[in-house]
Length: 243
Length: 113
Image 1 (cartoon, rainbow over the protein chains, first blue to last red):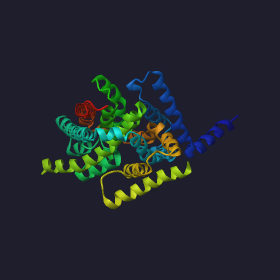
Image 2: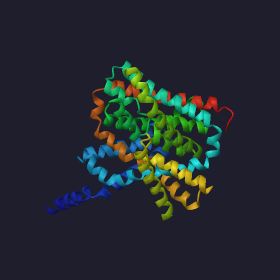
Image 3: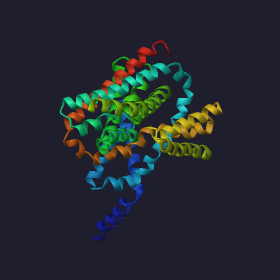
Image 4: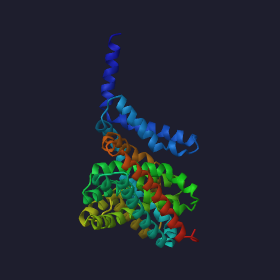
């Protein structure tokens, strides 16, 4: 009998070092979270991305597992983000006639969204006592992570903080976006998509795609164009104010 | 299927290389999206098997952000010292950006459906 705890420990040590454990854990918890979200009738606070992040993080803390160990398994899921982003070309192509018809409105609204996201984040952050480092990390938070980190570097901020703020912004956009848009009476799928992609990059685009292909197509395009617009404009405007 | 999966990976690979070579501020996968879009425009349709691969990848796009999201927990201490400006700036600006973008889009594309 005294061997049992030892065996359990051995199995745990084996599993904990095996990438399959955290890969499977992520898949299971995400599906449970998606089920909870669905059963709740789509309550924003039960957003499956947020729920699964919280559940996994709690488990890692309880089992004293480092993020590095977790990521050895989870990286196989993370890796698919790149190819999935490429695949956004498919809904975009299918909806391109519609995109072309509203090209001007699309550019204008993305530009307005880009300026609002960065400008209001910096202004509100400054009003509540944010340091220069915090403000330059907040500024590009609506932009997709790799570009946002590059922008922060150009502004002289902390790109590690930016990475965290970008993900929080995306999760927030995915959570409240559909609810907020319905609340202000925006039911046009194109407008919903542009708003979510501009404000909440890929994470909100994933949520937009769950609404409809049109919403997803506009969101994916808005994500790409907002990255470009913010990366070009923000450093220029920033230097104007700083200089 | 394998051929189209390879096509998607190739678009990403070429996209990653291109943005580094040219120095444009878009992520490699977004450049890859443009390349795949050009391929589809050239082809004039979405091949059925490519649609299968693409739709499979996109059906669970939300899941793919979970591993990076868990990483936030490892960096929460970064937020602690400046939690007030960060939470106010982040939450309100995201709300404002969603509202402004949607209203401008709706206003300008008014009768286009």
